[in-house]
Image (cartoon, rainbow over the protein chains, first blue to last red):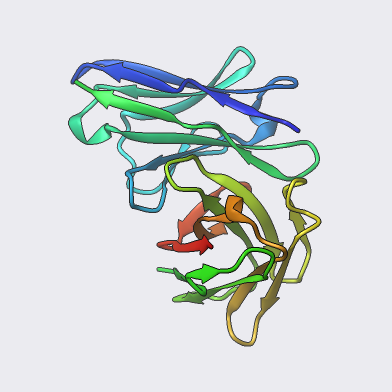
Length: 110
Length: 118
């Protein structure tokens, strides 16, 4: 079964930049995987940040950006703020047409 | 703005059947794909299934033999049924709407409902 990998955790200083990645256990993530990114605070439903690799969802600050880096999808937070401290999940569309979430990255801002 | 609300039993006994519904308000169920996602306590998100308003659906391979989704356009709601549940099915279950153009991401989420298998 296909596994989508993410870094377990990252720490970033306020105002700093962090890049989270999202890879496939078999093959490469690309724009054809239609990467999307979600932010989740514990106890809340996810919030959609980025879709179609690099399109920000309505109301999402432009400090969040999406891209493809090599064979992985990536989410970059530029100028991190305290309320960016959350769990971040990517989701990829597989060639079979089904979807898989990544394992999630816990971002700490300190 | 569309709103999604999950409803379910709260607790199900092992080996029994879990039935969940998602009511859609503020918009039509027609024209969209809809999804089910779950999150075991303290763990990450798991994609379960999608269903189109026309009834076309697909599932995560690990759940395909036990899961069924359906849509009721007259009630503007869709449902998930999971058979032969075990403790591993204990999770918060979310329903969500896929966005349009492309319809490959979730643009709206329900608040989630906790289902405990015990």
